[in-house]
Image (cartoon, rainbow, N blue to C red):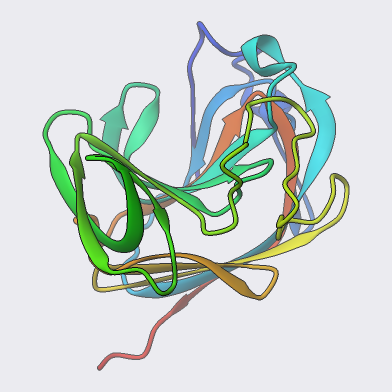
Length: 222
C-alpha cells in the first residue's frame, strides 16, 4: 500500500507516525492529512471492516467532530484527496457519501430529500433524484438536521457506537449501486454512481481512529 500526506496540513509526513499496523489492526493516529491507498483496483465488491474512534484530534480539527473515511474507486487526486467516492466516518454522520470529481460535474442518482442541487439526504422510502456537481454530498439517513461540527457530537438517532467502542462497517459496490450498512443497519444507498472501479484508501484527517478485520470480497458475477 502507498501513503500520500499533505505537508502543509500534516503534523508529520512520516508514514510510520500516521499509519501503524499491528497484526490485523491499523492505528491511524490522525497526525497526518492524507490517506493509505491500495495498489490494486477493485470493482463489484463487499468491503467489511471494524473501526473505532480514539481520543486525539489535531490541528484545525482539534475541537471539531472526529472525521475520517474510506475512499472507494480512487483515481488520481482532487485537491488533497483522491477523486472517487468517500464513505465518510464522522461523529453524528458516519455513512455519509461524498462524490469527489473536482474538474467537471457528475450526476449521482439516489432516493433522497434534495437540500441543494449537489446535496441531499438519503431516505429509504424517498424517490430517485439526480444530484449534480463537481462535488456531490449525500448525507446518511440518521444524520440530525441539528448536526454541528463539534467534537463529541451525537444525535438522538445515532447508529454509531460511542467513542472507544468498535463499529461494524459494510459497503457494497455493484455496477454503480453503492450501499452502506453501519452496525447492521442500512444508512445510505446510491442507485447510480459515476465511479465504479478503482483503488481503496483509508483517510487520515486529524482524528485518531482504529481499523481491524479489513476484508474485500468480490461479488458473484451476474
